[in-house]
Amino acid sequence: AMPKSTTTCNNVLKLIFNATAWANMADNAATSPYTNLYLSLHTADPGVGNAQTTNETAYTNYVRIAIARSGAGWTVATNTATNAALAQFAQCGVTGATITHVAIGTASSGAGNVLYAGALNSSLAVANGIQPQFAASALVATET
Image 1 (cartoon, rainbow, N blue to C red):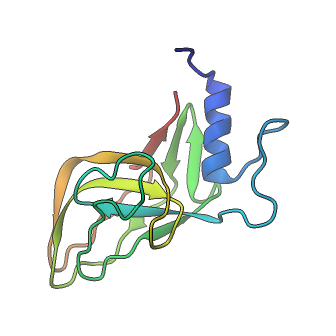
Image 2 (cartoon, rainbow, N blue to C red):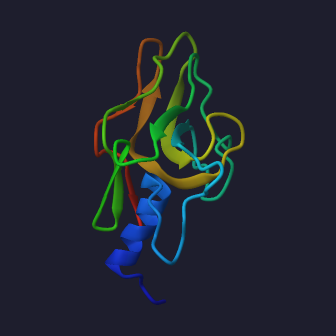
């Protein structure tokens, strides 16, 4: 396999996460581009390219969260994109779940396309009063 150059990796990530056109190669959609990407939490691997609903949690009060598709939402450097700020989900109500994976996708609800997904370093037991969150730079999407 032929690896991509760092410049190419960064251009791909900037197009996806910052909506930055890649000169002479790819432009952001002109008529109705995505303005946000959406984080979803999962109780098992959602799979890459699968719908965000695959193994998505349903703890009480859970909703996906939007992160702006811009430099304010995502930082891109050295083949990685990271969340630029704290990303907080809704606090769990009565019924909890055990979260094992997180995904970055295209929809606020419904199927949505999984762009990137990965396992948490350790599973998170979400119970009444627990509010899942990711510190700034804790979410890392890579291109190689």
